[in-house]
Amino acid sequence: MLLKSPVVFHPPQETCINRQPRRAHIESCQISLTLPRLQPVNGFRMNTEELKGRVAVVTGGANGIGRATALLLAQNGAKVVVGDYRLRSENDDAFRSLGIEQRQVDVRREAELQTLIDFGASFSGRIDILVNNAGIGMVKQIGDVSEADWDACIDTNLKAAFFGSKHAIRWMQADGRGGCIVNIASNAGILPRAHDPVYSISKQAVIGLTKSLGLCHSKDKIRINAICPGPVGETGMMNDDLDKQPDRAAAIKQFIEASPIARAYGRMIHPSEVAEAVLYFVKDSAVMVTGTFLTIDGGKSLGVPPKP
Ligand SMILES: NC(=O)c1ccc[n+]([C@@H]2O[C@H](COP(=O)([O-])OP(=O)(O)OC[C@H]3O[C@@H](n4cnc5c(N)ncnc54)[C@H](O)[C@@H]3O)[C@@H](O)[C@H]2O)c1
Image: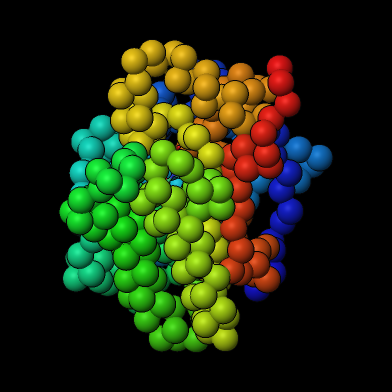
């Protein structure tokens, strides 16, 4: 399949507050539902229909990175099904206006994942895109980690990505047309962190899963890639973390200073900037890209940033 028209985007605006809604019908929704305005430059026409006719399932799509991804894929023409164990009524208007379906699922249960993915396939007889995004943090040292903690983190972050892939691959193989799976891993998947060993292990394994399944299913034209975000603001995961800090403002500053680009711009990564990477992976222009990962971390994983 050929790329229809190359598009070059202006970078997102500096702050989330200044971001303009991309579509008028999202204007009435709260600011966290908006995406940066992407404008075509150099005379190229922006193609917002490239994913038309494709079905995408996004796990954990009710909030944060998953929500931004669901909105962006739908804005680019995909029929999107969001699965999340905590559906949020504040998404209803924006999701409805883009035709996004919502289903309550616990991704730790294979049977529920299968039901979600089969529901997605009911729209066109196939699944084109799966985004394994649902995830939870686990800030505990080994001595404090119970078996239940381990199961909660590994089952949500890793087992769900495996069994979600299993059921999506079944549909992608069925007609020989293939598909795309994008796993939301983490910076912790390439740079393990001392404060959250179980989370770091889960995300390193997600990168292993990406490479292994990417290798197994290239023959089926199924591409499997991962994204490794650094600290992303306006997410439940980040807010949970910040809520535990004695000085929230100081903690935000620390997150920003850990990434050289974030420090240069004086802000955290926005969920929509991770969503743009998902969009890249699932577009036909990335047809030769599989088994790899892309860091969206403001350079955090490059090393210790220079002193200010
Ligand atoms: N926020 C960050 O800084 C950051 C950095 C790197 C990676 N990530 C990864 O990004 C992904 C998305 O997280 P986020 O930051 O947007 O956080 P978030 O909390 O805003 O979103 C996670 C979503 O997953 C859902 N979820 C959690 N457990 C579930 C389960 N068992 N079944 C169904 N849904 C479930 C939650 O309800 C929530 O809507 C996660 O995999 C996370 O590990 C986040």
